Each structure stands twice: as C-alpha cells, then as structure tokens.
Length: 110
Length: 214
Image (cartoon, each protein chain N blue to C red):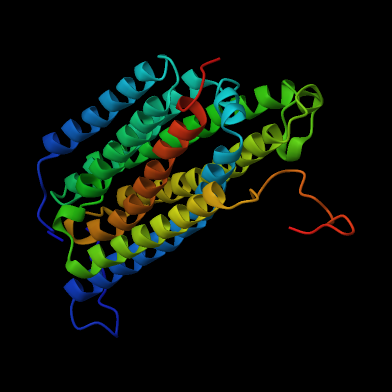
C-alpha cells in the first residue's frame, strides 16, 4: 500500500458518487416491485461496496497478501450464502418451514 | 509530533505497518463471516416466504433508512479524507474529519433507536412478540422481523464500536499531533468503519428497498 497521499478531491468524488447511487436506489425502489428491482438494489449496493473497498479501503494499492485475505473472506462468504440458498431452494420436502413437523405420523412412509 | 515505536519483533516500520494492515484485513474477513451466516438465513427464508418479505419491507421507515445510509457514507468519506490529510501532516483537519465521522455514528444510532421505538410502538418486537404478530399469524412475519432486529442490531453494535474507535482516534490525533508517521494507525480504525459502512449498504437494500414501499 502506498504511503503517499493521494488526491482528496478523488476521495470526495467517490463519496459523491456513492451518495448519488443511494439516490438512484431510493428512486428505483418506488417503482413496481419485481425480481429485477431487487437485483438492481443489490447490484447498486455491490457497486457502492466495490467503490468503498477499492478507493476508501485502498485495495487498489494493497499488497497481494492483503488482497488474498480479503478475497478469501469474500469467497467463504459467497460459498456459505450460495450453498445455503441453493439447498433451501431446491431440497424437497422444503426445509425451514415454520412450524416444523414435530414427529412423523406412525406408519408414514416416504 | 507523534512517532510510532518500532516493536521488538519487526525489522523496520514498513514491515510493522504491513503486519498491522494484514492483521486488520484478516479480522475484517472473520467479521464478514459472522454476517454471512445472517445473510444466508435472510435469503434462505426469503426463498420460502417471498410475499411476506416483500410486504415486510413496507413496514420499515425507508426514508430514515436512506438518510442513515447517506450518513454512514458521509462518515466513510470523511474518514478516508482524514487518513489522506494526515499523510500530508494536516493534523487539525484530520482530527476534525475523524470527529465528523464519530458524529455520524451518533446520529445514525439516534435515528436507528427512533426506528426501533416506532416498531415497538407498532407491536413489532424480536422473536414474534407484540400485537402485530397476533394480527399477522403467518410464520414468515416473525422470521422477517427477527432477522431485521438481529442483523440491524448486530450492525448497530458495530456502528457504536466504530464510533468509539474513530472518536478516540480524533482525540488521539489532536492530543499527540499525529501526522504522516502515525497515519497508518488511524487507517486501521478507518478500515473498520468502512467495513461497517459496506455491510450497511446491503442491509439497507435488503430491509428497505427490496419490497413494497409503505
């Protein structure tokens, strides 16, 4: 990571862009709710997060070891999230239904 | 002007600074995994109760949530510029920007408390307690709001910790005249604040945007 100061104007610009993206997300959310509006909300959040990590957290100037640590965390995050959602979305009978059946009726055969 | 001491087990300050940054990133990666479990629960239950999760968003204060998002982002920008200005030995400006970030944490928590109070008033409490759930007996409702309280509550604790850290850094920078040499220590606190901010931009989308507006 560089110890040299960078342009504060660039950091202020990034801050302004993230605030602009907040406004865009807020405006979009007042439209009709669809799967695509949810994807847009998460997508814009991802862009904001990437700007924060890349510029504010100075990932763009970080050493490889720091990048590996960050990517490792992100990879594990993605695995946990992806595998969990894939499981509950595809398993039959569906898990996580509340209230869960407390017992299997006598003589019940799948 | 503050000068960091070289610890016994480091050859030079550059290695000491790198070790500190690397350790902070390992810590943040582990923090991410704490939130990962809750994110996984949220999306798993959203798969099962999509209608309730869409409706549930309408019961949250979207404008307050949006203002809070902006507040955290202003705090993040302030703390990023503070680190940069400290590298230019602009101690007073750096301390002032760090104090601004600490103030952002306070305002965020006040608004979040107001939101929680409104939910309690509306009979929405963690674990499905409150009259709201008697009127909405479907099992997805307590799941949505319990996740809401758990995730935003855990995040609020992080904001409080981040606010204390950044506030303390502002005081330390002003007291000891921290400049370029000590900027990396401020940077560690800044990383924590940015992480807290990053988590929130997703929580905001999940609990305030991805559904019907109230």
